Length: 379
Image (cartoon, rainbow, N blue to C red):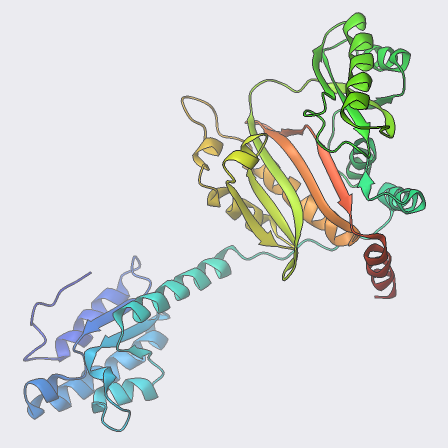
């Protein structure tokens, strides 16, 4: 801020001269003049009116001349329009915003800055994807079976078909198939998870085993997971046990997901993931569809975004990979309005790339899903 310190009291032309100098500066993007502007002829002497009107004419031309906004705050703007000092009336007629509230004037400048930032970062939205492929078959199967829960192996296969990168995954229906999956993965350490429409929270049900490093652990892990699931839920419908390689250590756990807002419809969700999603609730949202710029901006909006930049010597995460994932999920849900919720939690974000550890997709009620699908076809 610049204080003219009474320098304009006797010579209002100083306003125009200062404004001209400031707006020529490439580091200045706009100008807010605050105080008693327009009232000097009333406050001091009518002899000042001509000088104030001349300054007003020059300042009024500056937004067009420099391509930068000018906003006026004046205590004399509280008067009725027919009593308003002529310089302020001329400002109004020239299209220069004049406010008697300094807070309102500042908020206007803030809004202009935000609008400019949106324009600077705006990019075309990616083309809408066509419904079809693996997930269309999954939808038909879910509707035929009357279930809203998309099983994890179905969700992974659908997203892989949509272009997302996933580690190889196998569904085992008995311990021998679990062993075969382990061998097909090269005998590397694997994670094992229950797959059941009746069990959404696998860990709480004892349905997860990590770091199974040999055949004996894999076979025993399968039996224990199934036993735990049956103990946690009465007569659960168990599709099998998912076997997938253990993720690389390190990385930052985040959540990428879609929820449906009653007003805005499907919205993108991003924040800290894993157990922290329920503890810290550090999550931000955007209405769909989103662009890559939208996704990158969301990464900066969580309170703990410093974790993404790397702390205590850790390298920053691959923001580009996260943004690409979010845009892909946005396009996927846009293509399939039958999806009510979608959670990728956690996603491990690394300095290079990422790994999705868990996929959960929940469909809308079938009457809603059928209507949405029908409207999509008719459109």
